[in-house]
Image 1 (cartoon, one colour):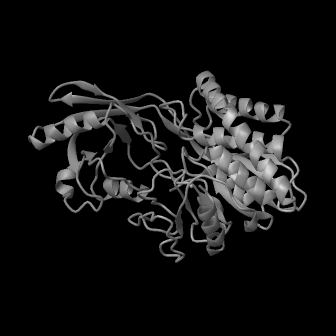
Image 2: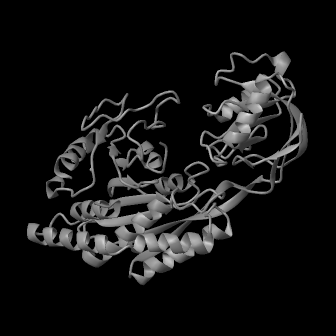
Length: 421
């Protein structure tokens, strides 16, 4: 069963609890058949990414894609509106990383979000093996550029330490994935200008630099970028399918993407799934007890800015639950995020069905019963109130309700029973 069908059936059941059982069964059948036979979500995603490319917040591609999505929703008769807010933004310029010694070579590189523009700077590389910087000697790092091991992930505080304690002037982050790919990411999630220039480079280039360093060859690198921090105004797109109870279910997916690709996976998948969920609900279950509010959050990649604005703008009281979709192909798990009241729902969900850090975090931190669908059953890091080193491992149909580990459930896609309401 596809994600959009499972999600639509679940939401339709939750939002139409007063409908007779036979009517609910008929609605499920209609949704199932339509979801299988129609592929409008994928068609929208293909058209949007082909015509407008990436959706980096504050860019024409983002604005045109949102206009297109909103028009498609309105064609279905769904009411929409925008919610505008200001954020500390960032814009991509020209990023250059060049090896100047022992041999000149231009590297494929991309500055991280919130890296500020700077004139060319040239320095030797020094290897950084550990996140606690135990092996670093300030006498050997002054004026140097850090070549970070591929497994390291730095915080804003780590960059401050490299600059202030070790007097380093830049950082190169090696991608963990082969094939000449660049990993786009942000230097922090607070919107603060990065203390020093940080660039992502490919696995192949990083491995080459590491081999040179291992051979005790002095490696000199030049860094330069016109990318820069800039204040900007962005918008969330909200689509509403009305209800009669005054309460609502919130479905969310982040709308923005990085600019190095077309954003088809991250998070074009979530956009397509929510669009088709809206279409199926509007066509087969338009009159429900609870409203369904579908929110396309903007500027998630830089710090969850869209969901942060949404939860401060809206009251918790009417919200029965929130479900977030981020890069979900075939969901293999749901995370209860420490909300014990979700455990009976998720247990029943698992028994009756044949099934990090994203925009579920903002509502969860406000106390909303929010859940998300991880794309990997191995690890799910970066839950609210957890330290960076903590990981959550998913066990088959095993639920741990303790706040320290959060509540985790393995499930497969299917139908949500009406008894949950």
